[in-house]
Length: 408
Ligand code: CTP
Image 1: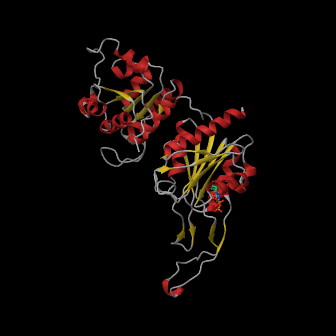
Image 2: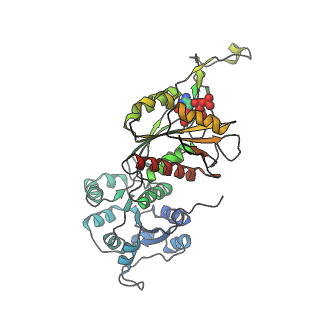
Image 3: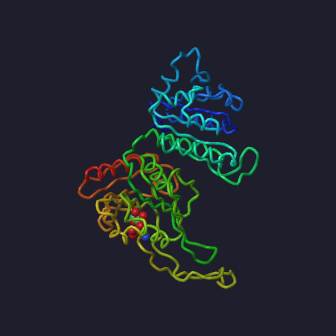
């Protein structure tokens, strides 16, 4: 599968200031470049104590910029600011935050911030005691509320000097890339919309240590949640157990069983503009789970588990959907794909149904790709080619956005 270069033609300025976290920004510059963007890295004097301009040049294939007054021309900051589709400063030190909040123009990054009208993402990194200081917090509030910058992070976790007991650590490179992606999307097609996504498997207990589950990884639902957030939605991800890292920016509601998922969805649904049911919910659960661990000796080798029906999360909550909202279901089939999917589309009152045949190796459970057919009442089925799940997610969201526009 050819690599995705979704940000081809986008121009990003990555500012790097003087923190040990600067080494992580080399990865950010590399990832943004691989996604197709043209990345201009600007380093402050003190950043160069932590990461060399040459390292950034190696991963972006472009000169790293360091001087406000350079051979590049006096108006370098104006050109950088004017041409940029998004700016990101990572890491952003306490000193940089103070200068940016004051509108100072004493280095190439700060002057470029003043010269741009593009969205700006700031990723602070500093000692947790410094981050908690009232002056730093005042500067951040000013940057966020008055100037409209996005402040991404910091997170909690180990700092260069050891463990910290509060936020200070710069967020991880992949999270920074996500924030830049959302900035590039600008006012996305789902800005202001509330989106619910169910994802992953459910686990139904047999006893306190054993459960019945299924092969769903959550990849498809997580990809949809990620793509919807990038388009500006407020995303609520109700997820069964998954090894996947929760996508950046979403509200994660973790559940285990179908009944827990049912309760979480039932609670959230009335406020949702879009609901997407991508979870592989167990239709049955052991009727009488054991309170104590089943011992091998007790079973004498053989034992029977009797099952009882689980709630149908999507089907039972139809009446809770907000009028005019769009509901999307999935159908996993091993035979008669379209016929079975059409039945589900009608039975569960979905506006769209994404059908996939799980017997195909590269499609369905626990693989990064999917081949799906999208159904909607009164339209011909739309068969998509084999695609990465993130690309399938984009097509599903395009169809959802078409319907939301038609509702207006
Ligand atoms: N679904 C649900 N709750 C369930 C079962 C399914 O919310 N207990 C949702 C799924 O998330 C999906 C759609 O309903 O969006 C169809 O799921 P699927 O498992 O394909 O169908 P079922 O209704 O379970 O029917 P069957 O098992 O007979 O194919």
